[in-house]
Amino acid sequence: MTDDYESFKKQILTLTKIDLNAYKEGQMKRRIDTLISKQKCKGYAEYVTLIKSDKERFEEFVNYLTINVSEFWRNPEQWKILEDKVVKDLVKKPSIKIWSAACSTGDEPYSLVMLLAKYLPLSRIKIIATDIDKQVLEKAQAGLYNDKSLKGLPAEFKTKYFDKVGLSNFQIKDEIKKCVEFKIHNLLLDPYPSACDLIVCRNVLIYFTDEAKNEIYVKFYNALKPKGILFLGSTEQIITPQKIGYSTISSFFYQKG
Image (cartoon, rainbow, N blue to C red; front, side, top):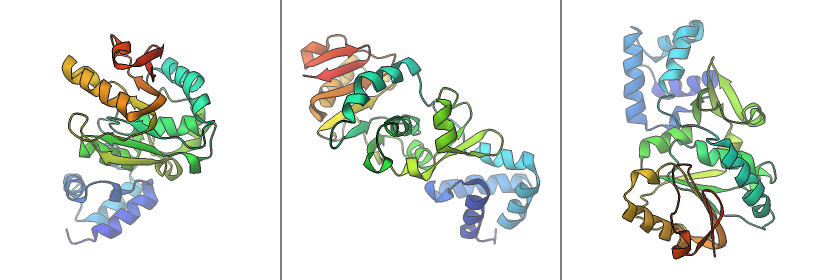
């Protein structure tokens, strides 16, 4: 295709609020080229004209970029506990360090930012978000989600922090994106961040052996500040937290002694 891909990316950003620069270019360009060929378009310019005039093709394009996302605000009762028993105390500190470990497609760290923003200006919120999978981090940085991913999100957050793209997709606003720093990280091999006030790691440790889980729980303990909190998923519990040094403040919430 002879059309300029850089120009195409700019047009798509204007048209859909999807920043294709957030995706790995080689892989994304190949996927888009395949989609364009499927529609028998001669190039990028012709394809842009098509999706501007054909709502069905527009939806097809957007949906093409929103595959395999996870869910915002999973287990809302636990987010309520997080807010009432953890966040309301955290925000009283002059600075806060939060790590979202195994963050997948970004729903969790972005949810944390939105929750914290009820109590703090966005300029004071910074979350480290890590995952071993480069592709899901690219997805997280793009910040594009379908409506199913947002079904559990409080309506106030969906209205305030997302722009609708087409009929059933939503782009998270840049002001939320800027609060999260995404990095590649292997929970079993790489050094952990230090002096964290809160570590959130949900619905991933279930896939590890008991030995590996115990090793990770100890590493999380060492990565927390005194009185720091570890927040796990609804399928995960530390059977004997006191052996590591944790106390249980609620189901799935553990505090460093």
